[in-house]
Length: 538
Image: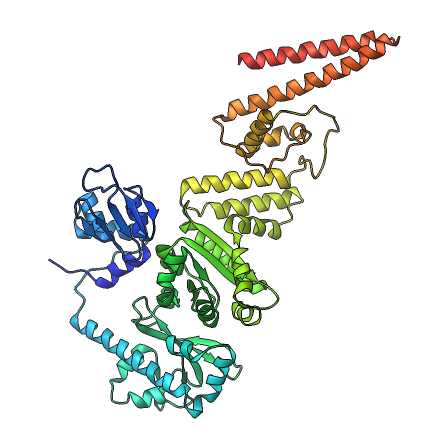
């Protein structure tokens, strides 16, 4: 029987959430760090089936079944290994490769790469504390890094000469080139990183797979990263994730910042759940990895135009990953500062306030629509509605997508259209006050069926109701809802006519000749009552 490429099965486990896959078959409830449900492999009434997302396995304490995401699909659907991974590949959006055993030579080659990277990191660390690394050391200490922080994150210095090419001169050149540490020029091998402050990049297993080097002379770009290699793929690697992984589970969220220094400072000053993409390009793979750990994410960006643009891109990417249990927010550091600046000048409390006041995704997306289009005009509102619709369609959870649609329909009705009481009164009529039951029913209808509210906006605007209030869900269909509004409108119309008749009757007793006006009101009252009777009979 052929063996299968472990790289691909590992990628399936990284891209897919074990909880998501299992919850399609078994309802799960989170308790502590694990999820629990009734075992699908034996009959039980009390949940004893535990799913550990972090470790990637499930275990039933009732029947003893145990396994990972692949074995779950195999056992629950009674299929073989290849069928299971084919199904999972479709869910992950991955193309099935041609399977073959991973050669022993490849395993040895990768192990040698890891060793080279670790040895190079040792060299960089040593150089940071030697005279030629003085500038780099002074820079990183001015940024608030302590010796313990430098040691933990294995920060170092790549000198101006070809120290790596010279140190590994006895290695095969192909191995050194494969790590991305060196390149081949006209005069032989040379170091890719020279005169750089060095940040090692770890995979989830704490192995160094690449480096990020920061310039010290003000040259651009500020950061250069190892090019993609056999070990390292930038779009699939999150800086600081190896340190933050456990903290993300404890905090029940992750925080995403823009750069390595910000991520390290946040991790060391009260926010250990913080990570950063390598560069400004956040990818779907980054979000998939984070969502596997936890679907609650706070994106924390600079408040400038670049930060706003990065936030809009993050919003776009995260929408397909939303679930009903997701809580995605956006925090912005203003005043031309970044998280590192805030922590140094104002401390952890100020940064925590920024994080705690983060804007929920539903509000952030709404603000994008309002800021990007002139919603005071019909054309601008149309463009904004198309924008929101396009974004909402990216949400794959149909129930959640429907909720977003209802939410924005309600907001459009309450803020964009002219009938709203706060913006304009279309008919200046004094109407009798309504009781709480009627008021709550009307609020429910307006929020649930904004298209009905739009049709009767001129009437609703004069009821003096705060439509932003919350009301309990009512078992009322769209037809019944419209019938209720029409009936209420007729009732209010009758009350108004009765009030007018009362005033006319007082004037009649005073001697005024207004009999014809009273007869005319009686006629209108009869017509209105007939309409109510007809409406009731429908």
